[in-house]
Amino acid sequence: ALPFTPPVKLYLLNGEEALIGYYMLTRREEEWESRTLEMYDVLGSQSLLFSFLKRAGRRDQAFVEESQKWFDALWETITTDLTLS
Image (cartoon, rainbow, N blue to C red; front, top):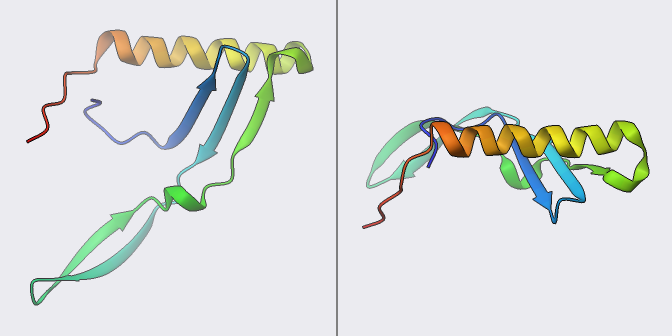
């Protein structure tokens, strides 16, 4: 688990494709147990995904490779085990 919510979603597919989308942060209210809770929502399901294919050229290849390095750096340094209860 990461100690923060990333501002983007990134899917790395078989080392060949990267899909990236930006979380669009919004503020909203939700009713819960007779109370109104104010919260932030990243609207992740509404994020437009941009595709980068390694085989599409050097620019896309570099994006896929650098995205993998970025993900690996996060995973190897600041992530922690997540215990679900």
